[in-house]
Image (cartoon, rainbow, N blue to C red; front, side):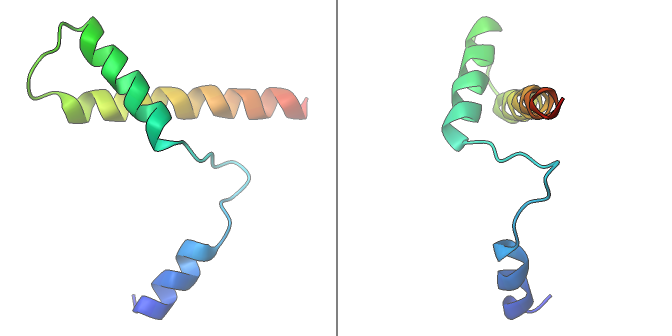
Length: 68
């Protein structure tokens, strides 16, 4: 993909079903999950992805509920 096409793609608004998650929100939840698991080494990516999925699922449910 060319640089120009990439810029156009990045500027397009997200589909209504997609939810933007704040980096700070993901980081806070991932940190809390990491602490709850006893601060294990080498699992930062797993905690980040799990936090991102959890927040995304929660926000999608909230969006769907607001449409009802």
